[in-house]
Length: 271
Length: 237
Ligand SMILES: [Zn+2]
Ligand SMILES: [Zn+2]
Image 1 (cartoon, rainbow over the protein chains, first blue to last red):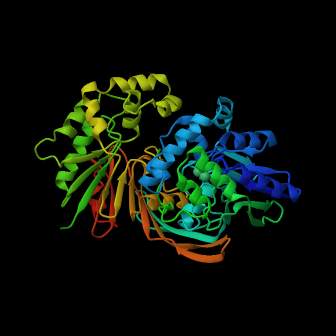
Image 2 (image 1 turned 180 degrees about the vertical axis):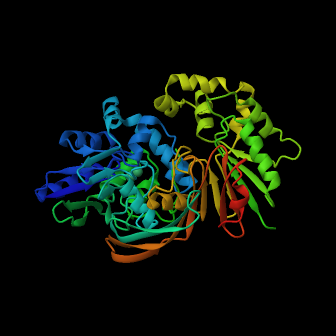
């Protein structure tokens, strides 16, 4: 059966509607959302209400968490101080706009969802704020999936969709302890695991303005990364009219965050 | 200069044990540093005499460099040094009585010193931490999955992690292996091969069981303070 995974809608209603239409057209009715319903974009209430109305299973994103708990993210959430200041502005604006009802919906979201061997999280199983970038250390990536007890880990947060397969892994070890002066060699065979990043519906950063999401077939385990065009201009205009930082509109119209990607995959959020 | 480190943990207020270790170290050739990796305090006995000795070493003591451990974390949390967080982990695992016992083993005048201790040391290409950078209570043993051990080393980007939380003594070396990774995105597919780096996790023991580490030769020696087997053990590895 095909099911769809969406993430990082970021209060971009035209993008969210376009993606849901695309999913509906294919007759897919299981949809899982990996959070970040709000933040950056101009229509936070509308997007939250769309997800609520469609009753889409959703886990809490980093933005959803921060709106509820207040900003206490460690600096790893932002690639630069400039980005951090803009992020704070958007946070304040979103906080002012969101209705209490929508806030309590965001507060009620779980940090992860599990269906059999599939695990759904926003950032990583450790934190909504940890980035699992496509080229991060392969063993560390495998550890995230394995420690969480999943075969396939679905995540978002990086805004760049990818499918990563980790296989043929092994670790050889030698042990010396107080009881055995002699060395004991051993080899651990690592299991094959997958990380699927759903990209971003409302704030793509993969180099194109199209919204992205993924479709997974739970019989074949095949994953398809989908791109959906939508009216970017409409969202950009709404961003400017709302008084949000213009750079968010600029970024949307380029689909790329120049020189401001979170690069340090090894950074572990300690919040 | 050839460095030899002594690594100690889990004293839990036991001055006698610390004294035995100091005596041992006096008789051991070439020890250049003494690291105390946390759990200076514990609920079993009054800890102030040990803390005073650590803060103000006797003449002839090897001067200790201390970090905090799981028990300090519980104590400091309960005493309000960790924001909202209290000694929840201790309360959950051992109950209210032990929390109260712990509070009574340390004079409040020692709390600021305990709170000033660091989480860990990075020395050369080694990390010295009570648990791991993931958590002060991270219980790493030789039975922990090598994948997790490798992750803890990768997080710190060090070649050796000295850990104490498990109270076990072990030296687990990652000696080889690798993994294949294939990434597919909208630009296509790319393959990547990664080797297991040669790295180690060393459990240093607790209480009378301590560890000597020869930095130059990367040899660990697992010792027991006051034990007659020490001379024999000194030469091994
Ligand atoms: Zn996001
Ligand atoms: Zn996020």
